Each structure stands twice: as structure tokens, then as C-alpha cells.
Length: 82
Image (cartoon, rainbow, N blue to C red):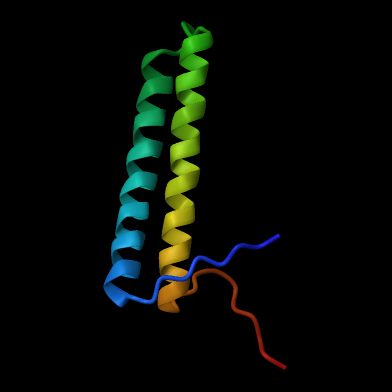
């Protein structure tokens, strides 16, 4: 099931992609720092916070993919049209 998020403004798509990139980079960096700093001393609350940071990284990747897709920028393998 695929949902199409359509933003008609070019500046809106650029802003969505930039915010997504910032979310993604910050969430991954914070998650990495959190895991390294609390290695071996994690409790239930720590696991919940780590899961929340992973969710923020996934949301950032979704925003980035949506913004770049609406702008026509496609990264990854190219499909050939037959």
C-alpha cells in the first residue's frame, strides 16, 4: 500500500527534504551517542528512548524521500522504461 504525499510548492518540497535530512542525521547521531554512552547499563526506559530515536530516524528518512521524490530527484537504482 503506497500513499502519495503531494506538495505542489517547490520551496515546500525543498524544506521538507532539508527537515527530513536534519531529522535523519540528528536522530542517528543521538541514537549512536546514547547507545555508546549507556552500553551495558540499559533499562526499560532506555530501550524505549532508543526505539523512539529509531522512529525519528525513520520519519526523517520518509520526509527526505517524500521531498526528493516530489522534486524529481531519485537516488538508487534507475528503472528503465520499456
